[in-house]
Structures are given as structure tokens and as C-alpha cells.
Length: 318
Image (cartoon, rainbow, N blue to C red; front, side, top):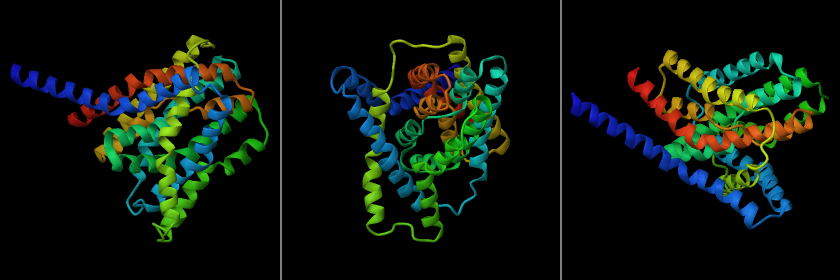
């Protein structure tokens, strides 16, 4: 019995190390971006240009290439339920905790609890689960991005007020447009359109490394500002409520293991940089939002592999 327990513990340790080693390059590139911004390429214009390049061209190209060639004939309902259970559980948590908080700070709490960094998610899914993991992560983004953006904007408009221009911006969102375009091409049976597919595939391959560098460059480790209590609550919503809701849904659905693990990646991802832009645009607490993004991004290197390991343990017991 002791030998069995020892062997099982050794296997779990190897699993943890394997996941850490798989995601280490992703966070190493983020750290490299931070170092380049502080000690090498300090130009704000350079990093802003690359941010825009990824957002308006490279990431839409990646989404189009992957979604246009994905197998959309299968049933994605279980996957959608896993993803939405975590997201809406985090939204409800943020709304509940935010009742006694001033609106600008409450809006940052909700974004910090529920939104995610798509780019880190795609990179982690590919690093840990290979091409199939990346494909599932792209499909997960297609299911989540429109719902998350519309829901968050609706909640923040109710909290802070806002104009219709905020909603019109969603219609012009390049990620949403590329998701729709890729899905339409796929559904009409065109799939790998000659020349167009090759162009989007090449451009898409450049998206993740450049974006990871930009994420690191935008981290503001010094001068963390805002309520530590709210930052802490955002981490509870993001790193506990969200993944736990996904795990409960997984136990009920009893679906494919890889779907569950990729859904858990989305559940435990740090909040995306776009949350800061939205907080600033809608007169929320942008400084608090920047602090939440930074703290969550730093902690996610530890939280993500532990979340995936927890998912594996739960699956093995089910």
C-alpha cells in the first residue's frame, strides 16, 4: 500500500512539473517583454504599434485560420456550458460582493473576476495540449468573446452609465468579426481557401509571441494602486469561483477530459489588458484595473498549473 501511495505521489509530482515546464516558456516571454520595456525598447510608440498590430491584424488572422478549418459538425453544447458556467458564476460573485462598493471600483471587481486574457489562454492551451488544445482554445474564444464583451458592457453601463458608442464598438471588434467570418467560411464548406488561408495562417503564427511580449511590456509592477481588498476579491472570483463552477459543471456533464481542461484554462486566466481600456473609456477605476491585471498575471504562473492539476484529480475520481 505504501509503495502504491509513493508511486502515485511521484506520478502527481511529475504531472505538476510537466505542466509547469510546458507553460514556463509562455511566462518567460512575458517576463522578457517586461525587461525589454524597462531596459531595452522603452518607446511607448513601439509597444502601442505592436499591440494594435496583434489586435487588428494578427489575432483576427489566427482566429479566421483556425475557425474556418475547425470541425464545427460536433456538439459544442457541453463545452459552451463549461465555459459559461465559470464566467456567469464569476459575474454573480462580482455583483454580490460589489453591492457595497462604489460603482467605479465595483466595475473593476466584476471585470477582474470574470474577464480573461485570450492571448495567454491560447498560448497555454497550445503549450500544454498541442495543436488540438489550441484548436479547442480558439473555439472556446469564439464561444466566449462575444458573450463576455456584451455581458460586461451591459453590466458596466448599468453601473456607470454610458453611451451607445460603447455598443457600436462591439460590432466593430476585429476578434468578433474574424470569428464570424471564419464560421461563415467554414459553414459554407470553403475551409482552406487558396492563398487566403496561407496568408492568415502565416500572420496568425506571429500573433502569440508578439502579444506575450506586449503583455509583459504593459505590466506595471511598481506603484500598485487601489484597494487591496478589492484586488483580493477579484482574485477569489477569478481563481476560485470561476474554476470551481467549471469543475462542478464537469462533474454533472461527465464530458471529454480535454474539453474540461481547456475550459479550466479559460476559468483561471488572468484578466486581459482590454479591461483597462474599457475601465478608462467608461470612467471606471482604471488604476485599480491596472493593478488587478498585473497581480493576476503574476499569480497565474502558479495558479494555472495547480488548477489544471486539480482538474485532473477530479476527473480521475469521477
